[in-house]
Structures are given as structure tokens and as C-alpha cells.
Image (cartoon, rainbow, N blue to C red; front, side, top):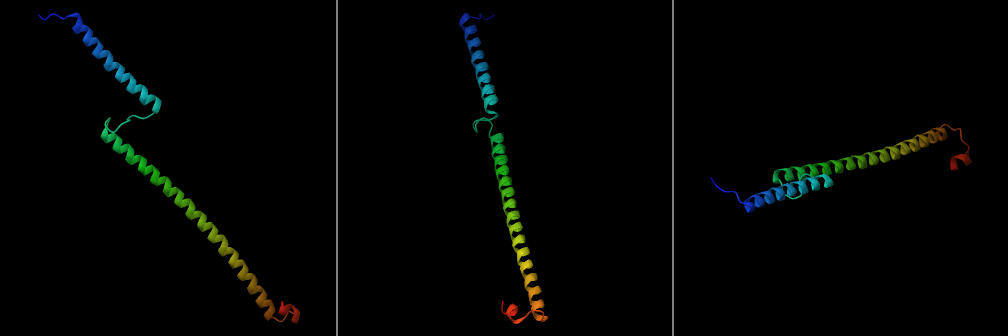
Length: 110
């Protein structure tokens, strides 16, 4: 039977305490920052997935901004074309009225 000395028990206890303290510090850091991995070496596959998701989210946000800009351009163009259509209708009305002989010479010059 092997004898367990006080220094062996002390060393084992200190190793366990350091291991538990390291786990506690890691969990505390995860809780305060809200991030599971802080370095790529923590879990390379998970970090790669997180970066991929972050990139996808940023790309989708850019797509949404592009769509909003496109809709704004379309609304402005539609408004401008409606105004042009209204002006064209007014010119046609004036032309028909002028061509019908209902205007005198002064109104025709105007």
C-alpha cells in the first residue's frame, strides 16, 4: 500500500482549486460578455460559424437598406412621372381648347 503524504494531498487539492477557479472565471466572463467563445482557440469550429453568421446578418442588413433605397427611388420616379402626366394632360386640354376656336387672339398669343 502506498502512503499518501500531506504534500500530495495539498498538491491535489490546489490543482483542483485552480481548475475550478479557472472554470468559474471562464463562466463569469461568458456571463458578463454574453459570448461563449472569446478566442478562436476556444472552439475554432464555433468561432467560424459565429463569423459566418455575423457576415450573413451584415449582408442581409445591407440588402434591406438597398431595398429601402430602391423603393425611395421608385416612389420619387413615380411621383415625377405623375406630375409629367398631369402637365401633359393640361397641355392637351389647352391645345384642344385653342384649336376649337374658343379663344380670342390675345388668349391665343398667351
